[in-house]
Image 1: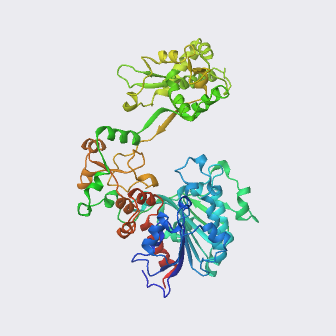
Image 2 (image 1 turned 60 degrees about the horizontal axis):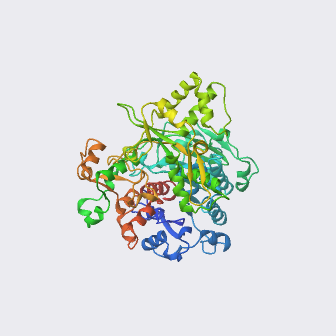
Image 3 (image 1 turned 180 degrees about the vertical axis):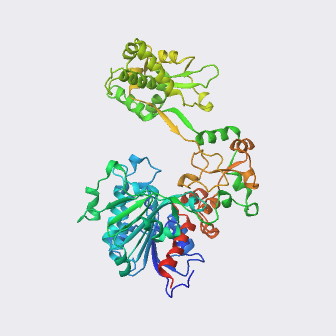
Length: 605
């Protein structure tokens, strides 16, 4: 790298968390080029605590000190107080603004994007940029930001770009899977780099083009790409502000016009999908993060993380395995029970839940089909309802979607041989890939039959009623009505590696990585494989060996490329809290490379 400039860039860091951005600016390669002069960290969920006692904030102060650090609500600092604390003059704003309202960790219909309580924090960034106009901006968020929100794909990202355009910035963005470029974690994040163009750049760059996506910006220089897809173009409507864009924004077929790599120049956007080109960067894997034998000071700490017993291992294997099974939603059953009991009897919440849990058995809503030489399958009355509805629709005798499919309706439909055969065929297709884990099979108390025809006959037989007398008068619940409210549903999920492979980058660390509960998303490693390069031949060999454990906090911090000194700064914070903080953190090495690239391209003389 060229010699550092006489004065490093003055930086402010918003939404600082535990200091991932600052760590990346404090390495031997970057420390001469950047100086953080002000930072802010505040967590609403911990707002009932003294500001200086908030966990992430405590870690940040322990590592970087209190000078120039503001541990208060950014909403108050910017809007209510007029930004007196924020320096008047600085060169760069960085931050990983809160991502929960854009995240895949939420159901898509629950992710509110910029209208959510976390999403609106973009406007605090925008206000600071408008008031201070720094030369550079570097932001990080989840990969789904470019597609947020679900009901209007790309609207939130369009608003962000439009706001930056109004403030005179050129913008480059990239959705990066860190593992594709040799980093230790397969963390997918959106990186936004904005800069104020000089006069020469303004004259030269009138609008972006496809060549620029490959070799025209900071991110494209740091993270090489190949196989760029056909680009998408988007231009902002004339005379519309970023504030108003959300009201008129439209997208064709609800597909976001913003792809994984893109640029915006003078309000014109170009973007495309791409394939990463890692080059000569050495590949890091999960094995690199694991504690070496010489680093283990307390064996009891690892013992607490170990998974003991075949039954416990089977539980982990189940949650991480492929699933195509029937599950039941308790909430619709509760509503059904409450509707039947309203104004008749008083029933408390505990009674209500217990009654709802027991009702499928009382009303004979499930049956096991156990055929010689084949896996046992579970069929529900709701499956029969769906199959009958589909068969009648095929025969051009559809029934209304809101009609209760009763015993009489099913009996009448099955009198037709063609309908009966189609119902059986539909049920067969429904059961084809459905699994029933042995751990659940042993708990089932429903009737067992040998054929699909017997199962259909059993579930659609004369209506079953169940009387429940917690208090007078007695309330009766019937199978037809209960099955009509769709309390059973098909649950499908792909398989995950168990244990996690040590020769690949790790999966993304999320906030729920800590704790001892069985979870699909937590990492589990085989200690025997960790101690020898060859490892086992298969995942089954690892599980049979019975030397599995979860990751400890130091290993999780290494997966985000934090130095050992950061672990030391976490003194007094629980192991689970340390791990949770890493779920919200950044991949420090990746940010370091961006800062090195920025220094080479824009800063160093």
